[in-house]
Image (cartoon, rainbow, N blue to C red; front, side):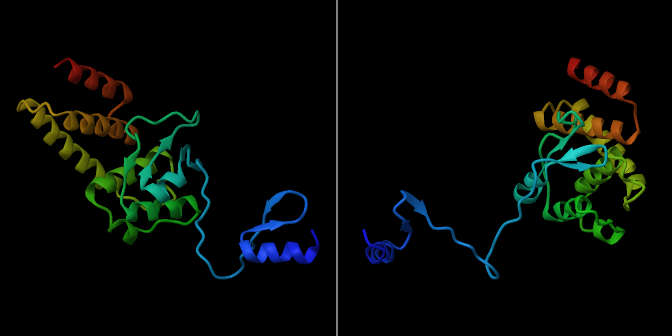
Length: 189
C-alpha cells in the first residue's frame, strides 16, 4: 500500500491507524481542557495507621488498616458523608483541620473523626472535640445498653455497641481488656 492509500483508509475509519507494522491505536494527547479524575493510592499513611484514599474519595467509605494492613476493630468499611471525606482528604494532603470545619459533621461522624484522630495520634496537630465526644459516647452506650436490657436483640444494636466499645477503648475511656471482657459478657447474655 502506498502512503496515500494508507492515509485514505485512516481517514475513512477514523480510529485505527495503519502503519504497515500491524494494528495499532493512535495515541491521543490532550492538553488543557478536559475532565480527568484524580488517581489516588489504595493506602496512604494516616498517623500510625493507613487509610484508603481511593475508597474514601470515590466511594465515601472509610477503610482503616493497621501497620500490617489488617482491618482495625470498629472500622470495617464505614460509609461517611462528603463533609468528613473532605476533612480526612485535607489531612492526608497535609492541611490542618480547624474547629469551624468540624461543625458540619453529624454527632456520629464527630465520634468517628475524634476517635480516628486520637487513634492515629494526630490529635495534637489537628483540632478536635474529644472531650465532648467522650460524653456523647457514654450517653450512646447507656442508650444501647438500655435497649439490650429491655429485650431488643436487633443485630444492628449489637454491631453498633461493638463498634462503640472499641472506639471507647481507642480513645482511652476503657482499656482493651475491659472492652474484650464486656463484649464477651454481651455475647453470653
